[in-house]
Length: 113
Length: 269
Image (spheres, rainbow over the protein chains, first blue to last red):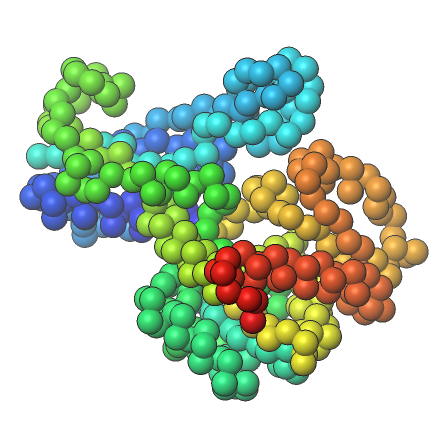
């Protein structure tokens, strides 16, 4: 549902970079999507195809890098994999892990001509 | 598209004041309590804050469908994605000039490399997709905090009775506390974070319990499992049950907010 506005942010970021760096054509966009970021990559792909049309990145190949979720278990005092925000610690079963990684979404890099 | 509920309308920002009879979404067109309303518009226009708050100045009367899943009771959260945990990321976001490095395939972050494709120049961007939102949200939060304005975000599942609860709350607050309802753009991205980010859970429509098979304690246990700090108040906007407790919670939070905003040497207003 919110993928369209995310796609618009991606376009803005790329256009800002194009202005700053003076490139006019983007062949490929590398996006990092956190496992816990609540983004449907297929929906985002669809929205980006629409939103990027007519921009410097029109038709660009999209590459998604999945960033695994990670939580901190206070009871075990260690970082544990976290696939769903509310999963318990896989070692001791404690709930309420502090999310340490996998929430973010970033435009990592672009391949330009 | 409305990013609140995907209803196809643009995000609306509505204002309603204590005791207002209108529904929040249409109140802005009514220009009802003009005096205080201008304060909120000034916030948006003077600061050129979030798109959602800027819309306050021009918002049309067109309302969302009644099924919209979220009303914001706040400006601070309208562009916020989740918790304050992100504000440091936004604050640390590199400036564009510093953030761009020219890279070439085969070196550095070459995990982006796809074999068999022509190799162009890789330009590292490293910018958070929601970085701009986070920065705006942080600015809104600071703006409100500095003025001792308590801003709350009221989130729920559709049909849970937020509007009725708001109307009733505003009627009860009338004459005691100036209040505004801002209904605006929010990121449904938050929904998975809803319970984790919440301070208080209102279990509304409690008057319907005799007619339902709903395990209240189980619902509360689940919520506490997700967020052990969550406070719970059972309310009914219909019967009024629990509303005194809810208002007491609101007023206590408002007092905290105002205390925090008051300069140490100055007596509270």
